Image 1 (cartoon, rainbow, N blue to C red):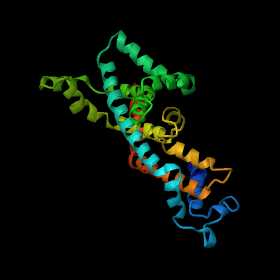
Image 2: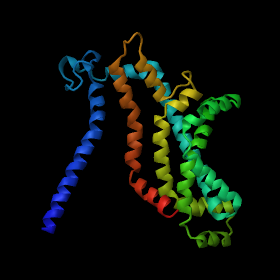
Image 3: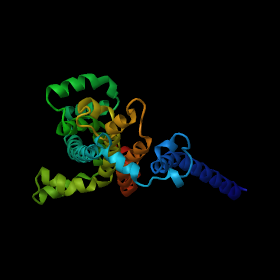
Image 4: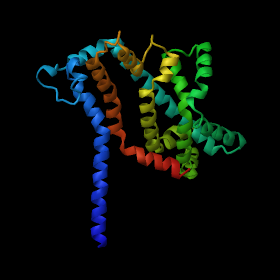
Length: 280
């Protein structure tokens, strides 16, 4: 009876997981399918398979690349995402190491400041942030990277701090005895051990920054638009004449990079989250 109960439970769990997977994948497949349709059929027959007169090949993709400056927006998003993620990982990992190894009132207060920043809603600070960013001339591609560092530092420091606490201090002491200075100890000994958490933080921040609409819109506006802003402009159309075929193609092109990055690094997510949370 017990074995039969376990089998039934596994079947039920497997069925639920299949249904949830289909629920999450269906919208993506729907967008992909409609990206190959003539725009006249997208609104009238959104669930039909693209064939015959519906099928337009890669015409929508060529249109999407030239619509609302999507190609330049794509390159701009790649630049912002890559450099923001790199600077977040570099700066926050060093900060977390400093907080753990230099134990005093200042580092404790600094740690709680980072933790507190995680619970502050962006909407609470976006107006003052926009004003300050404009005054200090950070309203450009390079400046927004530093803004993302500020907003992404809280979670990253929290996760890195939890992992660093699990690294034996004796390893760093041995490196010091061998002649390493603090920077060499960090980059040669400590940082390689932070790889699981670093990749987890990279994935979380890459998905956030790549898909972020509000912050680039407030700081960069429509002159230096990123992919989400370009897609929003394309959705508006002119007098309601939105090219839904090109829009669907833009959505597909926008999600491809982040999906590839996620699939290539997903095995580190759970490992990094557990290491950063449990050890803390």
